[in-house]
Length: 170
Image (cartoon, rainbow, N blue to C red; front, side, top):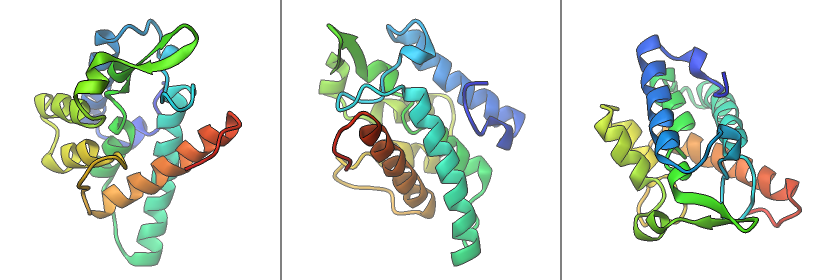
């Protein structure tokens, strides 16, 4: 119930998406979904960010179809949107009232750990590639339409989170 967009997926894909989130959550130090932070830059709830990205991405996909004639299948786009930050429960923790990066976050770039998990769970190469390379800090990025939709939805939500907390947006 906490993830927007699951109802847009087949039961099989829905189960795989939930399994991915449960896997990182159960491997993390976070007791509740609400406890997971989004970023060291802003202490904003990760699940709020993920749901904002998914809603914005679904809306952008409708614009892509109407304006460009590009149709993005829900079975491709929605898992990318929901899972783009699946590794963050393992990357960020709260210490002394601050969000800090874990040891893992200093060893492996954000997106890569999530992509490794998704590979283990049998997700498609295209989903894995977009999740692995979606961070603006990555040296190379996937250039497909699903990656573009994720990028703009992610930045839209990131700017909202930062402005909500009185910080400078990207």
